[in-house]
Length: 117
Image (cartoon, rainbow, N blue to C red):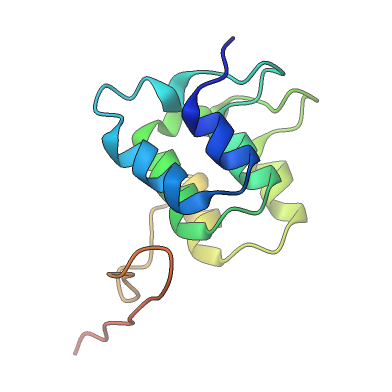
C-alpha cells in the first residue's frame, strides 16, 4: 500500500488537481493503488464527497475498484445508496452506464445539458 499524489489531492479536497492526476495517469497506476488504510482512490473520492465528474473519471480509469470493498467491508454500492449521489453516478458505479441525454462538457466547475431531438 502506498500514498500517491492522487490520494493526497483527494484527502486534501484538492479535487481539480485530483482530476489532473487521473487524466495524466496514463498507465492507470495511481487509480489502482490502495491507500495506506486499504481504500482505493474511488473509495476515498466517495467518502469525501468529491464531485460526481471526478468519481466517474476515477471509475472509468479503473472500474474494477467498484467491486472492491472499503476498508470497513462495505461495498461501493452499499455506500452510494446511503449518500446523496446523482442517479448518473449510481448507474455508472453499478455498471449500467450514464444517461447520454445529459452530458457534462465543461469539467468540474460547470455543466451544460445537451438535449437531443
